[in-house]
Length: 153
Image: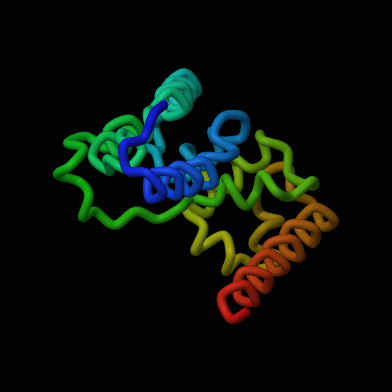
């Protein structure tokens, strides 16, 4: 790809590379966090494939990204409030296999409620015993603390 912007173009290219590192494997959990709750595994996989194949100018087209992820109306939905469901954070916890993450997200309905869940609340979910509930609660708490520290450092 050739940039006609000289030094600015090279800087933009470096920033774009930095922003897009990690697209591909693992991207499905990010899309699952924000896509329609009814999105099938095939639709998620298709969205990941489409995002990976976007060009630099397409990556900054929020309407196009919204359409790929599954927000009907693309550009018209850019003002809609979107809340993560928790798949991305749960994928970072070794104690939580995908099937258990699905049940947790289905039960709590979103990251905000999942983060507020107590050990007893977590144990009401099928497949979550005392040990796993403690691991999940501690893992989510560590992630929340790390996020707060990152904001202030």
